[in-house]
Image (cartoon, rainbow, N blue to C red; front, side):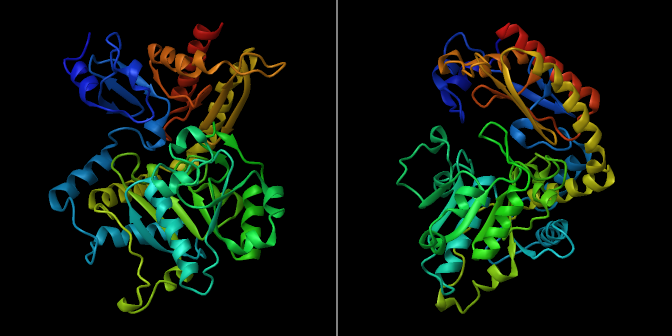
Length: 432
């Protein structure tokens, strides 16, 4: 039955990445989520749905995990918020130490700058990189490089790094000057004059999320890191989506033995509970900003909720859960369960490719495999399949006609199999 606030919601709210005309249509009834338990979300009518995209790629340990709930409640009763401009608090120091330690025993990433979401984590890294070169003897390094079909956030600087036109929302000439790359060959072919102007290169390691869960070739990240070291160009890794176990290791870059100059974290940092982001960097970068106040070498950037105490408490509790529940050790079996559960999709005539990295999967829907022909955009096949999946008791969201399945790390093997089965039934209902 319609929720009593459904019309109020349509009258006053504006949703992100959502076509609002059909949303506000009289016949549309918004799905009201009122509770979360484990890997399920419950609507206002009491119906439970499996969370098939980890609540937009954020949830790690399941909803309302008692360890995280207790940490947030305890911290809220003591200190919910305090400015981080000229003040500090113990949780921020402890979390910074643990994040640095998590990057490895010999990692040069020993400085943490907190913010509040993935876009600002990337903005922090980019601004640090540009300002570092400007005030440390190489002012010509004003250019950035990012990859084709990249997505790094929605603030102006982050969006200028993006390579997906629909997500840019601004003219190409607005934002940072960006050299667009397609792979290592393209990188090695850059003119020397361009290389000398590069301040940093940005990439999501192992897999591009908003590009449709597109996998990078093995070794690309390692080769990119070697090129950056050779040319003294900063490497910024966007692990907003891939971090905290999503690809099978705590950080995706660890699978190729790469340590960047900047590591951007958000989403799973707090287990998917409250907003918090972190940009990790090296002592070299930090030292490049030191000086007397009148020298104006300070990093004049930050946010009201930098090092948000509730976020820090949740993040520390999440790291505890990783250790106490042996989360990473359980992932290989869950990854195998997902791989097996995806196999039936390969038999469907309208599935062109299935990609998996850890507990991330992308399934491409096409009108024809041979010859390869996409569905017309107006068909909205991905959205229709995900709507049908909702009827099956599964919540997920497509990237155009790429179906995404990204269970919380807490999902059991049986739940993972059930998520895939429900998505398969939905695909059959819509296409066959």
